[in-house]
Image (cartoon, rainbow, N blue to C red; front, side, top):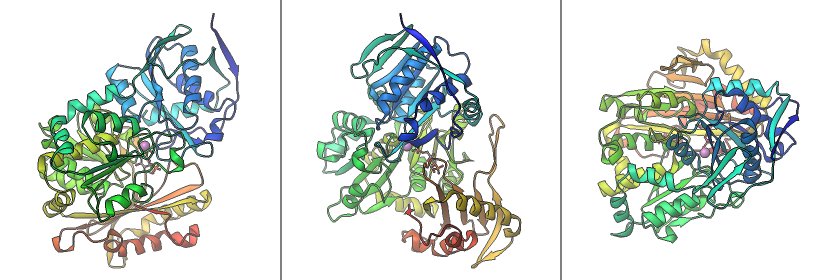
Length: 545
Ligand code: VG1
Ligand code: CO
C-alpha cells in the first residue's frame, strides 16, 4: 500500500512568479519544503484535475531529476490520474507545450530557468502551463502566489523514486506515470509544418554550410534527431549538442555575447552560410548569416513577410503580435499585408489569448523569442526550421534576404542595453524617478528629439479584458523612435535594468550600420534621462544585444 502523507509546512514569502515562472538559485529550491510548497500552491490554485493528465518535464539542468521525482509523488497524492514525463525528465519548453496540447492534458509543469546558468551554484525554475499549452495567465500565477503565502501543509506519496530513463509506464499509487520519448511528438509537429524534403535537400546538396549550437542545453537531443537524423545535417554541423546539467559551465543564452563559439565561427573568414543557437530550455533562437547578425525583431518581421513560403502558413497570417519593447519592424509588414498587429507586455503568457482566439498566427519578442499558433510557447528550433525553409525556397543568403527586407520596409535600428546585478533598491529608485518625471517629459525636446508621449505601458487584453499595469516606462518620440525602461522579472540576483532603443531609418543609403552608432544619440539620451550612471553606479551596460 502506498501511503499519502500530509506534511506540515510554513509559507515562504518569496514565491511570486516572475515573467516566466518562479526562478531562484538551486540552493534556494533545495531548502526543505521549498519546492513542495510551490507545487502544492499550484495544485491548490487549480480546480477539477482529479483523474486528469499532467505533463512534466524540464531542461535537464542540475536538480531537474530530483524535482521531478518530488512532483510525481505530489501529483499522485493530489489525485492526478496520469503524468506524461519526458524520458530522463527532459522536455524542451516548446515540446512540453506540444505534448500538453496533443494529449489534451489538464496542464503541465515545466522545470527550467531558461537561459540562466545551471549547476549547483546556478539557477533553477518552475512554471505551470495551462491546458492550451501556454504559460499560466496572471490570474492563475497570482492565485498560486496568494496560496503560497498561506500554505500550511502539502501532500506527497510515500514511495520510492521511479525510473525516468526507460520509455514505458509504471504506477505511483493510483496514478500512471508514462515516460515518453522527448522528441517524437515535437518532431512530428515540426514535420507537419515545414517542407522537410526541401530542407533535407538544402542541407545535403549544393554545398550549403550550416552550424547549429545547442549550448549544451536541452535542444542537443532535438537538434541531433531532427536536424541531424531526419534532415541530414552532418554531425560537424551540430555543435555543443550533448546536454549537460551545468551547460558545460556556460551561459545558455543565444546572443552575441554568450553564444561565443558560434558567433566566432559565423564572423570568421570561413563562415558557414547559416548559423543558429537555442537557449537552456529550447524556446529562444539566434539566427546569423555569414558575418551577419539578424536582430530578433527583424527576424520576426522577415518570417512574417515570408510566411507563405512555408507549408503551414501558405494560406496567410491571421495577424501578428509582438511584445511592447520589440521593434516595430513587424508592424510595417502587418500594415503591408493588411493584417492586425498587437502589442503585448513582455512575456509569452500574454500571447496565449490572442492565439487561442485565432487573432494572430505569428508572434515574437526582442529577447530572441519567436513562435506561432503551433504551440503556446516560443520555439527556438521551430524558428531555425522556418529560416531553413525560407532559405531553401529563396536560394539567397541570409544577408541578402534581410537587406532586401530593409529596402522594402525600411530598417528599424534596435538594441537592448542590460545592466545586470544592480542593487535592487537603486534599480527601484531609478524606475520610481522615471515614473515621477513622466508627466513633465511629454512635449520636451531632448538632443534634437521631441517627446510625443511618455507613459508607463498598460495593457488591456483584447480577449478577456484583464488589465496589466506598469509594464515599462516608454518615451515615444516625434519621429517614431522609442526608448523603453523596465526591470527584468527573470533574474535571481539583484535587479537587471533593461533599456530598449529603437529608431526607424527609411533611407537605404543609411542601412546596415553598426546599431550602436546608428542609435548613438538615443543611447546618450537614455542614460541622461534616467540618470543611469549616478543612480546605478554603472558607467556601461553589462550586456548589449
Ligand atoms: C526575459 C525576456 C522576455 C522573455 C522572458 C522569458 O524576461 O525579456 O522577453 O519572455 O525572459 O524568456 P525579463 O523579465 O527578464 O525581461 V525565457 O527563454 O527565460 O523563458
Ligand atoms: Co528560454
